[in-house]
Length: 230
Image (cartoon, rainbow, N blue to C red; front, side, top):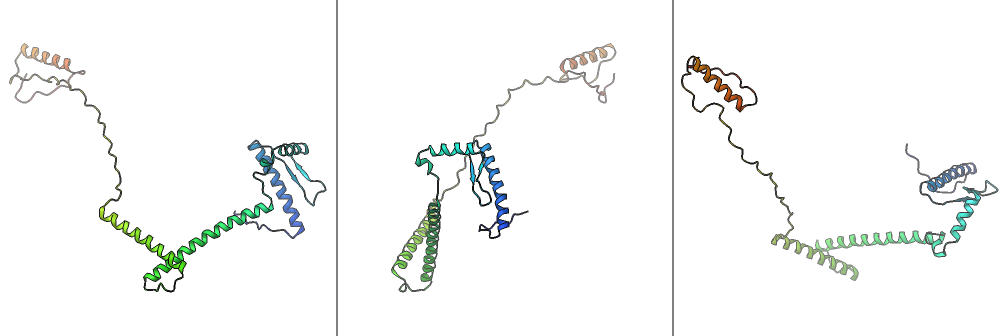
């Protein structure tokens, strides 16, 4: 829920003013306690009001007296470094408002000069201008013409800044060392017809032993091609 903006003005109703004072006094003391704990600073508050015979002192009279004594012990320059009375505060506000007014006047003047320049370039007469207006329009025309000529020269020579692209050298990993050729899985030349009898068994046993020596696991049995017989 958004809070309604409080209007900073004197509260004419006595009951509402007293109620507001009580609530805001509690909030002020709470903030004083929080800032003294969170920021580890010495702070005190003395509140005078028409609703109490004696002023309320926070955190205590002795602590407030110690803080005031320490403040009075500082040089006068340090005491008044960030201190503003009513007169200084009003002068500071007037100075800020005056700076804003001067800036707005400059902006308005620039808009008037630009409008006058386009009016004259569109066929209007320069004779109706005053001397300050003529000087300002002359300066603005010279500046605009200079900017246009620089832009045309830039486009002719092609000296516009091109985006710089940095090519990073690709670091390829080194090639692995050459591996020795694998031994053949089978004898290069097989007889067209397997031997018969005991010779066939010896030849098959030798072939299996060769395969077992080359592979970690026994070879899978293979079907003999057509035309072979055992």
